[in-house]
Length: 181
Image 1 (cartoon, rainbow, N blue to C red):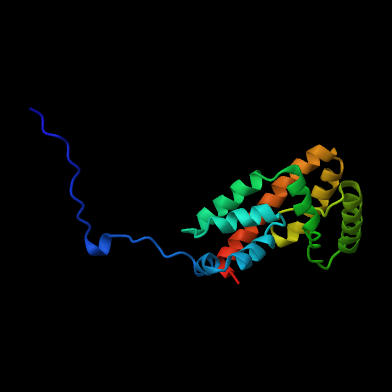
Image 2 (cartoon, rainbow, N blue to C red):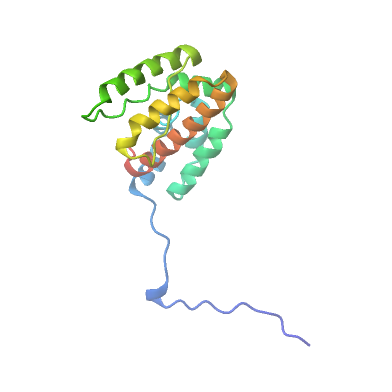
């Protein structure tokens, strides 16, 4: 008769065991916020009240990755009306820092004009995530993205803007998990 397979007993040597790291201090503060303050902090990440309510309602988050995953999932569930509302509440993308050199003033002038044209065409601020982009590339990347996206049809741009909004919200959530008010 065969003996049943039993798992080996766990015998961690104390210096070899790896307890789970504690959640980030900012995340712990976020998890402890009263609901209305958590929603207010989340609305600064993405201007959709249902998105913020949903994320606040699922606290506490065990780690920043769980918070980011919740934000991502909630971002994909925005209705077109919620996305439009969130986009209209977005501040205009900041102008990248001006670097001394030839063409910088002209590039900034072109960027301001492109921002204005974008807002007239799509009726919301231009949103872009420049995470991972070096400072000396941000001006050119922003101007290129604006010019490219101005050629989009409204439905195509709504999709591109929604993706940019999710990336911005993710970046802001990550910052919230570190430096929660």
